Image (cartoon, rainbow, N blue to C red; front, side):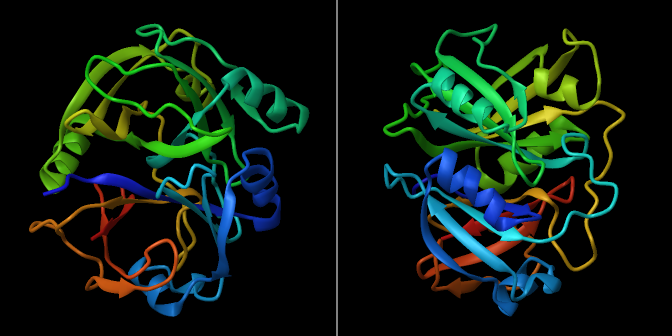
Length: 293
């Protein structure tokens, strides 16, 4: 049996054409589908108001089968990016964090943190920016593998999504939830200053936070971060998806036996599913996870 792997990150943005200037333009992701959300798909997400909304699917030039999907919807009231529980960030592998930083800076893309080495390893050299839906984008120059995990070195300017980041009420409970659902394990645990969280919550730059990874062997799927007490549930208009990083999808060879589906799973022919069966579950912080097999 093949273990779970990341397949898709779905982003909701207030202006899709503006988002494409970032993702298809500056980040050079390739558009493979430009369509609308079907009524059946919107129902599976418990987001019926998104039926008919424009939806674009992108793939990295390396042709890695890990996709980004942009969906257009208005910002909900009281949305403060980076301060809510749920999916918070997408981590993409890049050739040069310094070069992508300069490109984003010249385009006036909001920068959370410029490239800098991590305190615990010289194998990762990341920067962080904020996208048009409020999503955090981690652009990580992978220089080698970690002791506990194998990480993808970029084969193009900006390559595939390789980690999805979640902000948690209870990090340990979220680890247990996903490891039980996906039959995965803990890849690593750390406590360290975290610039993205500290900037969002206006905390001193040296404030430490706990984080851990959900991994299948040496393959990391998710990073789960313990959020500060000031964090709040993600606001969302009734009938729509959360703004920013709305949903993550994993591909697995067989459906989990203990999944509580929002709707009965169904076959979806269109990109990025290409005839696979898809079911949707809701996590402990109301985050949505698509499971594809």
